[in-house]
Length: 60
Image (cartoon, rainbow, N blue to C red):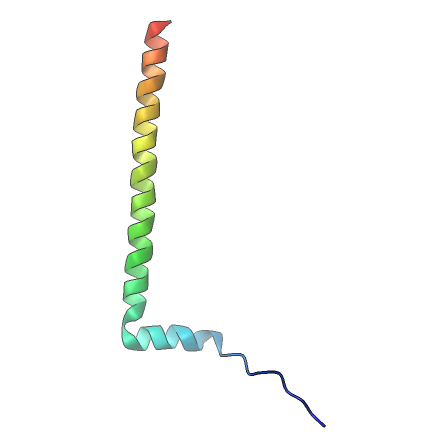
């Protein structure tokens, strides 16, 4: 008697579904927005850190 495990969905099936519905563009937009936000946040932290380093160096 053969027993089969549950069929695993084709990995491309979900990508095709997102692409057909046009939701893939929404996913890409959200990921790009998050990435740009992280880069902006890192830029602000670097700017503040540079300011603190300059203040410390000028005090010495």
